[in-house]
Structures are given as structure tokens and as C-alpha cells.
Length: 514
Image 1 (cartoon, helix red, strand yellow):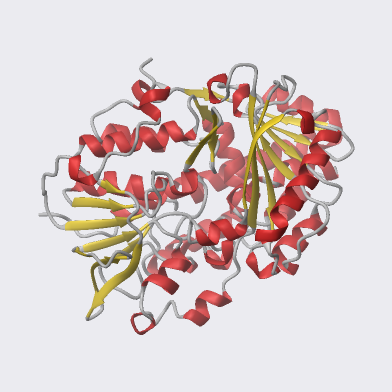
Image 2 (image 1 turned 180 degrees about the vertical axis):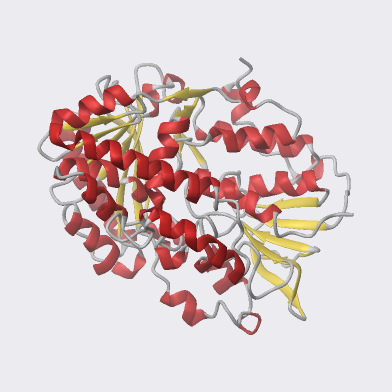
């Protein structure tokens, strides 16, 4: 299999000037090179647009940026692929085969959910194994679990396959979708849905935590997101050899072959608007780029509030943006160890003593609690090349409130990191303190300052029912003609499948190139 070598994977980004440009049609500028922006650029290019991608950072990926430090490779954000066919589509559009460039490995288990008392549930895609795991915790919940799977399947069929690529551009789109929302029982929260079928508290957590992976509180977000459970069972949970960054570089290579340049260190200061029409962008350097279309893969709330003058925003006013309910913030500690922790799986949820109350602190009270739960990622369980020989690469992600908590992360980050280190050293990673050889952290303040995430929220607006589909910022701007949105902040929402689907939805609302 022709996978990218480490040398190819981390080649310096190619300058825009060195990419062969073949003007093909109307000019489209894409702001941001996250998964949504890269997918949009490919789809626009195939449709006949002359595309240019502008990236604020010094390398591609956005939230999927890659850090390299002391011989360790860290994926900054996304770590799993749950709908690989969405990536395969992009390669096919470019006349290529995804598996020729990217080596995806199935995860087994998908995740280990470890409870505070030391017990754990290994969550996988094998039905027999899952039934045994459910029975191990509560035999009487097995029939309810099977009923829950049927409901999750319905949500996948109606919500993901039926509505994921619908742009929800008009009230008519919303009205047409109402029967599907009704059939999913979408007014109910995912936790309430799970609780309807399962009685065991631990099983209720295992089957309802998924919205946290896309920025939602399981006690608040619509149960339509049960579709994630079905997505995973249907197509599996995968990790890419070379890390998620290998997929980002694969997408960049597709664009390079199509003559689509990506300009790095090219932060946009303003989307230019004339008579209600997007006419291009102004960079922080002062350079003005003219375009027939602007597609923002930047955080949607940030885009409207900070890149577009208020007089051009009748719908997305500052007041409306402020009233939105935003996803949690993320504290991420990236670290490498001088030993291998062979008994730690690739993905583990390390739960703290509280569940519902902790989520209330994070999402509703915006209070940084003393306790925490962690997503512990050990990619070297699958790909040892991401660390030096005999070492492990990790990241520990703690959901925390966004910046409305008032936490001064500049001064508190190291204190919080040490508390996480002590908790992991005491139990899951014995002796950790003595084996750390490299370390770095990312906080909600970094998401705000570096990634331009409004309020430092990791996933944009929380995926509540009245902040989803038609109620989410539209793929075609409600305010400005020629302005479009892709990524976590628009429809259908966060997560790699969501942002890739947003680029498919974009295709349904852009003008055809003649």
C-alpha cells in the first residue's frame, strides 16, 4: 500500500506561487484549511471554480493541525474517522483511490469507557461482543439495548443519510424535514432516549456520551445524534497510519494536483461586501483579493462577528451571535513518555466521579470544576512511528467551560495540567510523572486566539435542536450574497463527518459554472 512516508507527510507546505494555476472559471476564495475548507476547495474545483485557499496558520488542518515536538507527532484535534466513504468520495472526484494514499486501520475496541470505580466497558462494533458487555453490566438491559440500536439506525437513515447534505436554505427545507424529526423523536435529549431503553446508570453513560465528541451535552442535545452510534456500527471507527495529519496532507496533495494553491500565514481581516454582495477578502497584510464567491471554513460566529462589518449583518447581528449557546471549551495536554503503556488502548474515556453535575458545570453554569473527565488518546497503540522507539505519544483532553467561565488560562494552565498528571499517574498511567519527556498544552484561550473560535468554544454552537439544521447558520449566508459557510459552525455540525458533509451541502446552493 502506497502510504505517505514520514518525510512526505511533514514536507514544508508548498507556497502558492509554486503551484501551477490554471484559471477555470469564477474565482472562489476559501478561508481556512480545516477538513471542511479542504473538502469544499476540492468540490468547488471539480465544479469548475478557480479556487484559492487562505490559511491563517503556517500549515494546513485548522483544528486538525499537526504538532511535532522532540520526535513525537501530535494530532491537535480529530483522532478518529467514522464515515470513511466521505473521504473516499473526495479522492474519487479527483480520479484517485483513497486507499492508495491513506492506510486506515479499524479500531477494536472503538473506545474503552473507564468509570471512576475502576470498572470499564469496551465499546466496539461487534454485536456479539457488545451484547456480552451490556450483559456483564446489566443482563436485563440487553433487550432495551437492541431496541436502542433500532432507534439509532432510524436516526442515521433519516438524519445523516436523509438530511446531512440538505443545505436547509429555506423554510421549505425545514418543513420538508419535520416528518423526519418527528420520526426520530428529535425533541428528546440523547440521554433521555437512552434512559428510555436502559436502566443501568453506567450503560446509560456509555450509550449517550457521543455528543461530547461534537461539542454537545448529552442531557441537552437532540437524540437525533443517536445516529453517531449507528454510524460507528455501520462503517466502523478508524485511525489513519501517520495520524489524522496524514489525511490532511492527502487532501492537500489532491488540491496541489488540481492546481489549487493554499496560502499559509494569510490571515483574513475582512470579508469585503459591496451592495450586499461578497466581493473578496482583505488580508491582515492589507492585500485585497477579489473573488466571485467567498467560502468561510473559519468559525461561523467569529466569521460573522469579526470578519463582516455590522451594517452587512441584519440576520447575524452581534446580539444574536451573543445569545447563542456554545459548545464547551477544550483543555488538551499533549505529552510523550519514555516508556510504553501497553495495556492502554488507542481511545479511552477516563470518567471522573460526577457525570450529569459535571456537565451542568461545564455547559450551563460555565464553572471550572475541581473534578474532570478525560478523553485519553494513545495513537502509538496503533502506529508506533508517532513516537521514538520505546516511547508513547498521548493526549489527554478535558472538556471545560468556554471563556465565559472567566478562567485566566494563561496563569492557570500549568496548575490544571499538573492536576491531570497526578490523576493519571495515580491510576491509569502508573509512574507517569517520572516518564514524561515532552509536553505542551492547549486551552480555550488558545482556541480563541490561535483558531479564532468565538468564546474559545471547541465546536461552535452547541448542537441543540433549535441550533441544528435550519436553525444553525446556513451554508449559504442569510445576510450576504456570494458568501457561504462550511465547517463545524454551519449545517450539519461538528465532527469530521459533519464538516465533510457541510461541503456536500455547499454544492447544492452554489451557482453552476457554465
